[in-house]
Every structure is written in C-alpha cells, then in structure tokens.
Image (tube, rainbow, N blue to C red; front, side, top):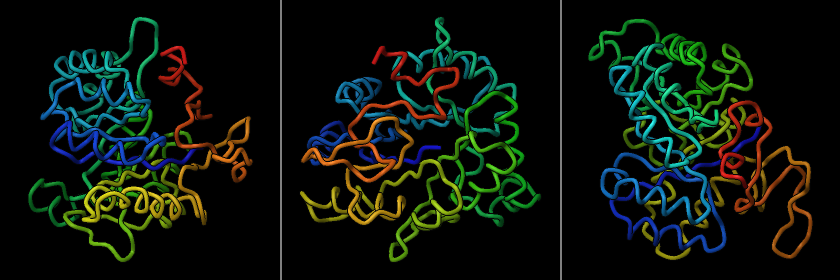
Length: 289
C-alpha cells in the first residue's frame, strides 16, 4: 500500500495558487483542489494544474439526489483528475449512481471516495445538531462499509479511524485523512486530529495538509521547509523532501543520480501504485502515460 502527502491548495485565486506551486520549482506534489478554489476559478484551474504535471484530488464533496450526482460526476470525469469525493451520507444509491456517472465509456475513471464524518464534527455536535446518537466511531465504520458495498475505492476519515476502517473494509480500501497537525501546531476548527507520525502508525494511506503548509507567514522558503517536515514525519525519514514511500520496481534517483532510500520514488515521478493497478486503471494509464 502506497503512502502519500496531499497538499490542500486553500487559496481563493489562480494567481495565489500558481505562485505557491511555483515555489516548489521542479517538484510536483500531489495536490487537493477544494470548493474555495474551484468555485473561484472554475474547471480551468483544474486543467491548468493538471497540465503542470500534478496529481489532483478534487474535493467537492457532492451530496444530492442520485440522478443529479450521476450527471455531475460525468461532467467532472472529463477533468481527468486522480481522486474525486462525495458524502457517504447520501446513501448507497447516490454513491452507486456517482460511480456509474464517473466511469468513462472505456471503463476508466478516477478513484472515488466518500466522506464519512467531517473532522470538524465531534460526538457532541453529532448528537445535538445532527440527532445521530450512535458513537461516532460506529457511524464512521458504518458509512465506510456502505461506501465499500457501493463499490467505492475508499473514504475520507479522521486519521484516528484509519486502522479500524482497514480492519473492517480491507487493507486495499483507501483512507484519505485530513485532520493532521504538528504536535506543536494549532488544531483550528478540526476536532478529530493527530500528528503525521501517529497517522502513519494507525494506517492512513494519504494525509491531507493545508494550513500548516500554506499559511505560514515567511515567504519563499516556507512551503518547502514545512512540506519537508510533514513528509519526514509521515514517512519516518530524516532527509526526505522529494521522496515518498512506495513499492516500485525501479529505484528512484536523487538529483545527483544517487539511488534514493529503498522503497522511495521522487515526488515528481509519474507512477502506478500497486493498489491502483486493479480496474479501473490508474488515471495515468487512462491518459496513455
């Protein structure tokens, strides 16, 4: 199972987003485009970032009647991103319809994952405001199982829940986990959070980080240093910016042509992950890469 860090592009304009990505120079980190940026700039920003060589998680969290979500997913599928999500609360029927809409005529599609409970939701809010009285851990597992039964590839969940979801739904059922903070950082509006090290230990497949990387006030060097710390903590590596743990047939090379640490691949290198080699094929293969 591959591991990766996804950087959330929490910006409100194309200019800020591209200026941020330019700071990575030759690196091509996996990025998340959420509602703020998508609604501000529309589908063209997805196409532009895709053309730069970035893998993209399109985080729009669709939640509507099945037919509407099916048609929306058909439109989004044309953007050729790597991961798309929706709300598991929309029921199995909605998730199945989304999967149908997302699948292209040739059988390929992006990975589809479902949000279980937002990491800003805790037991008290779920009880008092949503009138859901079951323990939040049970609700998350139930939603994850519904997503698996509907044919989805994984879920968005708290890193604290990744291990139990793998135990319930299988090791190849992806867990994409926001709610990751440095031990010395602020949690903000997140409730169910942990550190990168702990997320790795519990079993997160992908951690999503935004503000701790995109918000620091020091211009120029901060994204690289903050991202390096995040990746180092998640992969338990000492000097690892530009490397991500993978199972790869060919060893990665660092910039000097020296073999990288075992099981690593360069951030900017396009690849196929073992858990994505089943149908539907990885989007890179659909592009003919």
